[in-house]
Length: 132
Image (cartoon, rainbow, N blue to C red; front, side, top):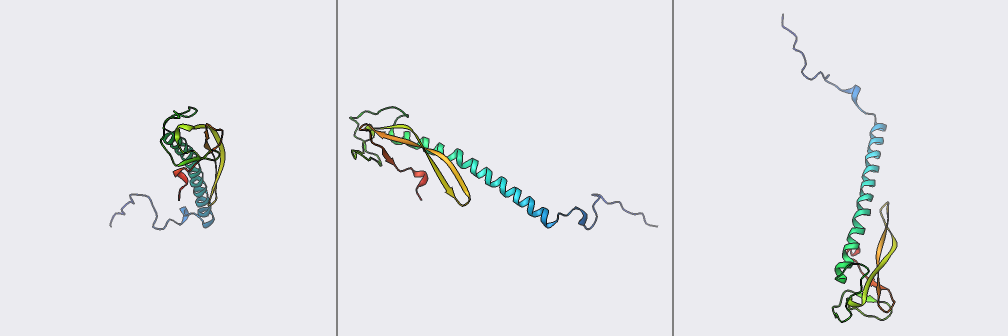
């Protein structure tokens, strides 16, 4: 008589006992989606402020809280709301202001750098992070 050959993997032909129910699959999918959403929020919360904090000193040509040389006549894409100057020597980064970004189910709170003019007015700086 022929000898019976043992199975190598110990699996049965049909794995019905190990299958997940539809409710369990949905629960696992919802859990993975929640983890994915939390990872995206964490990434955006870290990425947006880093971009903003790097872009303003690059435009002003100096670190935060430092006045520039007012004789410097280099114009930037920013304008004082009071005196209408556009020369970066008159501008200074001074603090931050809170903002909220809302995208398809994501709400991200972050702080935008505030830029002031020597005349005391605020400066509108359009950041490339938010340009469509």
